[in-house]
Image 1 (cartoon, rainbow, N blue to C red):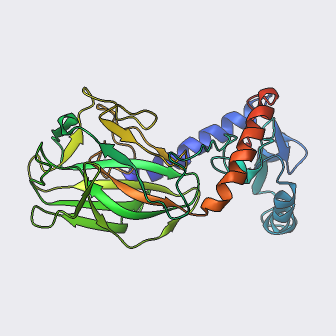
Image 2 (tube, rainbow, N blue to C red):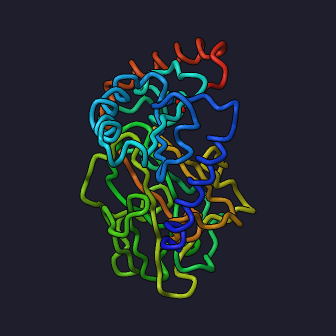
Image 3 (cartoon, rainbow, N blue to C red):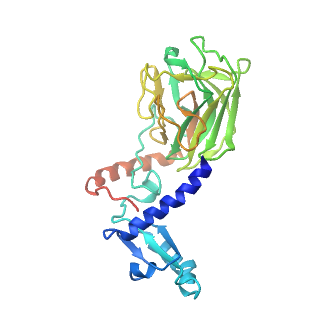
Length: 313
């Protein structure tokens, strides 16, 4: 599947660039005076750039682009264009969800006013009746880090009202599109770990996950009905809401969870079917910086009303 994607992606990019070149309404910063100069080029390179990155574009002009334009063999064979948006983004990069969007990082106070080293639980299950045996052997939850965190423990749901583990389960944390796990934990009936908030946990080696980190939490079991998931018909398991029986905690917005509703198809990682078969505990790194970020979020939210929908590209 990934090999097919590698073949299709360059073709799709070529089509987009072709449509962009033939569109009279496209805004761009051109490296040559007219499109006619590119009609005989053997290779056209499009460079995505934010409007305010003038210095970075100049570095390109002063280095490899300048070399191409001055080289007698390449100057007529290779064309280069900078592709930018019509509108810039007024939000500083450090206050965006990620550098490639114009979405304001929306942080809120963490429940209970936890301190610097407070350990938060991603999910708490108050009623085991919302859990059900899974019909798949691998379940995956995608998430994105919007403020640095440290994962302290990985967890798995029990397999019934007695809060026992009916099978062997492996939980792995992957960086998106990476095969090797960052950390992992193994659970069994003889070694279930420690129970907290309706979830069995085991500690893992701690790493700081930086802002922008995209990860996948994967639960695997080789045994039939070895995994337990939240019954979506009994409670809400979306990343943006909770039910009285299932409580999700993203640390006041430092984590952004992928979809977990029943029927959602796996995305390109193909590590498992989207869902929630456990959770993890985490601490917020740099908690002392959060009051400043919260104040800035409030200020930018008030100012953004008159900004419109401009993006950085």
